[in-house]
Figure 1 (tube, helix red, strand yellow):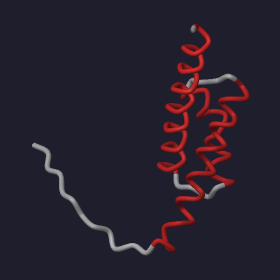
Figure 2 (spheres, helix red, strand yellow):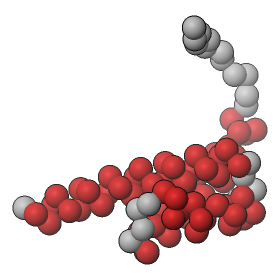
Figure 3 (cartoon, rainbow, N blue to C red):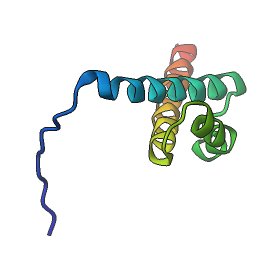
Length: 88
């Protein structure tokens, strides 16, 4: 059995904003690596970016991995759209 509970977080924007900015910077970094190397494989991008994202953007492991997963999804989507556009 699973239960889902909605909890409203009482966090000020100024407290969470630095983390959001670091996450976005890590996401953009992974996108840049993937696009420049024509690499759309999540495992390969993980090896290329994980330790740098942890150190440079001071992210916990879960957020570093999550930013890479989101970037991989975006790269694959952009690449497939580009392929579709070139076929037309």
